[in-house]
Amino acid sequence: MALYAGIDCGTQGTKVVIVDDQSGTILGSGSASHQLISDSSGRREQQAEWWIDALIAAFKQATVAAGVDPQQIAALSVSGQQHGFVALDDAGEVLHAVKLWCDTSTADENAWLLEQLGGEQGSLDRLGLTVATGYTASKIVWFKQQHPELWQRVATVLLPHDYLNFWLTDVRCAEYGDASGSGLFDIRQRCWDRHTVELIDDSGRLWNALPPLISAERPVGTVCERAMAALGLRPGTLVASGGGDNMMAAIGTGNIQPGILTMSLGTSGTLFACSDSPVVADSAMIAGFCSSTNGWLPLICTMNVTSATTTVQHLLNQDLASFNQALEQAEPGAGGMLLLPFFNGERVPELPAAKASLHNLDSDNLTPANLCLAVVEGATYGLRFGLDLFRQQGVAVGEIRLTGGGANSPRWRQIVADVMDCPVVCLHEKESAALGAAIQAIWCHRLHGGSECSPAALLAELSQQFVRLDESSRAQPDADRTRRYADLYQRYLHLLHKEYEVSL
Image (cartoon, rainbow, N blue to C red; front, side, top):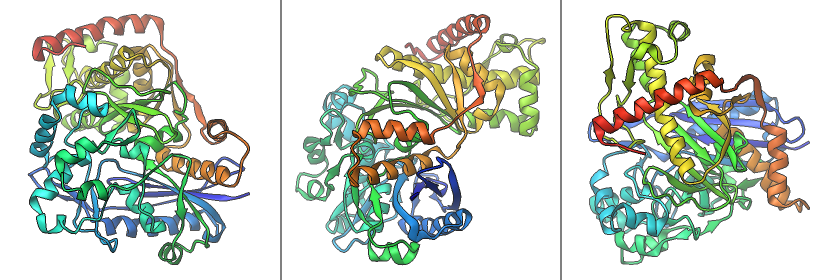
């Protein structure tokens, strides 16, 4: 038996899980929170040192909870929040607070870069996706303009998970999955795009600062002295390539072959699928990322899921149990009430300035139960819009694996199954990104040790062992309700077109 650690550095905190390669279970876990720097300009930043402090604390918690000595750990892997910008100097010092994926203060810089690329179509043609404000590229433009003296000291540009790998190993590198969300990367050729880089900086500094790329199954290296001292690891402990949080969550939900869709019913909504070939969509709403399994991971994100339901819940002064009880009291269609839940604008469909709106009210249907159901249905229709975009690109979906807080509601799971006309199931392990990182660590360690299995076959074997479906949560689409929701979804699409001139 060998032990492995999966690390997930998210926006709110860092989680660590310890697994063994025999039982397929998590032996122990730990977590530590992060602070956030924010203001009304859209600035969202963190200090990289906070991640290190959280990693050390969460790692210690996890090993104590598992009752294991860190010296027993053979390999570890890092999952990290995507799109952040970490600038290092020659000595490896971080030059500025890290701008995060949710930082919107660089919208003007992103608009400039998109124009230089030839608009959405030019970006799709060159990179395989449309650069967005959240991506790393606009943060680099901002940094170069706002801090020219620091720019002259930039030696390496890293993403958050790359920085943690650097702290663990002293090696500066990146892997295809996370790099594909930088806005500097050609997803089809799996390489940095020099043309885009030189639009930002034609001096060669940025090009030379981009780290070498490795494939998903390769190790970054072994732990360095500082990591051994801080975490108690033994010399030679392997550090796998790691990846972005969505890429690791794909592994942790078993989404490693075509036909499976992972859908998160979290604050926002995320959908991603596995593809054996690049998905270069004709829509800017699909991010055709690479996966951290040497394939591709087309991804769609909506802005209003449990953030929308929580807004209604607070309006009605309900706790979560009362909200879910109200859901059970309403019939599909919410008595004719239809809610466009764009409380935070919307990304899919692409309506950043949209506002929420409630339609078709009368004296009979305006009830708390119908309002609760209307917000759940509205959020689910937005996810169906994303699923239809996938289907238009030839992405086949045979099963949806649900994560996020909304997935705890049996009624919502059934609504997803009926609206999507697709079976739905949850996972036993809720920390899918951390579990995915642990699985990747085992994958890398075994291949590095000379496993005779092919990388794909070994990953499939590990997925079958570690990813456990919660069959008690499974929801099958009901034929009558599916037909009913097909009509209701068409009403949603008609309203979208009427209000915002949006069409699929």
